[in-house]
Length: 51
Image 1 (tube, rainbow, N blue to C red):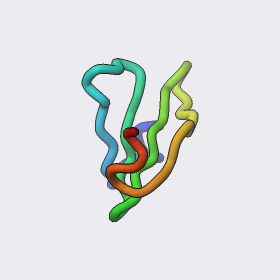
Image 2 (cartoon, rainbow, N blue to C red; image 1 turned 90 degrees about the vertical axis):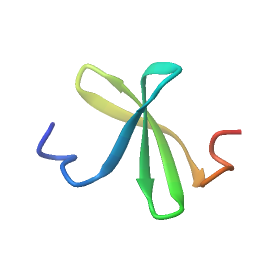
Image 3 (tube, one colour; image 1 turned 180 degrees about the vertical axis):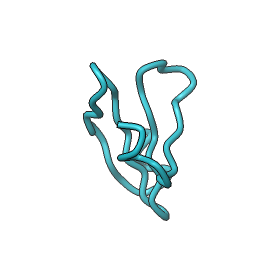
């Protein structure tokens, strides 16, 4: 999986140990990980996605 996400802006979300944030320009995609897979559960523009 490490080669599949290389070059993407992905960071762990600090209060949620299994959650990640993928940034593409002004859009944020919030994902969770389970058994080496990412599941997208929220996407939106910066500021709106975290509300």
